[in-house]
Image (cartoon, rainbow, N blue to C red; front, side):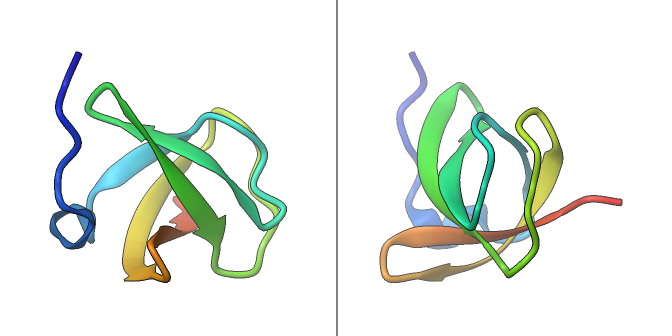
Length: 65
């Protein structure tokens, strides 16, 4: 199992939504699951997301078009 990276080091990377984000949910990157929140839009599970920033210990993400 991969070790989690410091959250700030994940900004700009692409992850996969493990759950629906409405706006909170989970994303997976490098074999590790992280708490995340959408930047406002509903995101379907299994969608690719880009990590925009860290806020209150959560990754803020947006769906990749």
